[in-house]
Amino acid sequence: MFSLRRSEAVQTASAAYDAKVSERLKAVGATRVSTDDQALSVEAQRQVIESWCTKYDVELVAVYDDIGVSGAAQLPDRKGLNAALADIKAKKAQILIVAKWDRLSRDVYVAELVRRSVERVKGHIFSADGVGNDETPEGKLLRGMLQQFAAYEREAIRARVKAALRVKIARGEALGETPYGYKREGKRLAQDPHEQRIIQMVTGWWQSGMSLRKIVGTLERNRYKPRGKKWHMNTIRRILTRYAAGKI
Image (cartoon, rainbow, N blue to C red; front, side, top):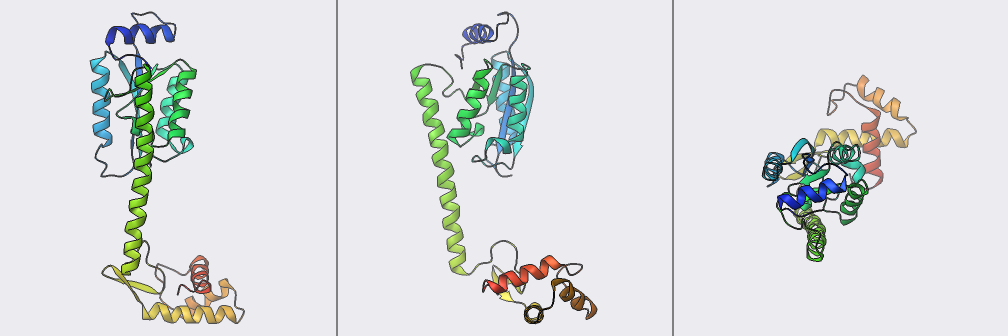
């Protein structure tokens, strides 16, 4: 990585990939959002990246997005970031630019893999917010601290989510898909009489030795109403699995 001052940036980067100093540097951008309501949206990240490239007279050849991707995601799950790295390795660009370091990754190991991959082909990584971009000991220390804080924030978010789920469970609030045999009444689950009756029949038939296929056929012949359009063996299997686990 190199200094953000334009003259040093051009000279250092040009020397790094053995090009003429007068040749315009090229960059690829990488964005990441984990949810639709992310404070730093894809559009906002793209705007910051474009502004950085304009400021330093760098040609932005492409921007790749990872949408709905956690900061803890491993490199194989980062299609956008991998596409940007492919451009760097193919010498289509010399710079990988992100809006902030935590947009690169909140996982210290992944961030280090990306850094080594880019530097292996004499490329450079920048954060458009200008923090921790230089190669001084202080700059390297700051980058490391930012990556550690990103990892800490990831773990803190995970802990808050788990705590919130525990509270909801303690209140008896329904979480996720409504299990067969129940219906939602506000935020809580209540037994569905029709489905509870079917559960009793299905478990009785299974205990008597009837196969899943025969259970489905019996339900269809007697025109018992399914939750969806038709009965499936997977539905019966899930009912029996929950019954065996004592969950219904």
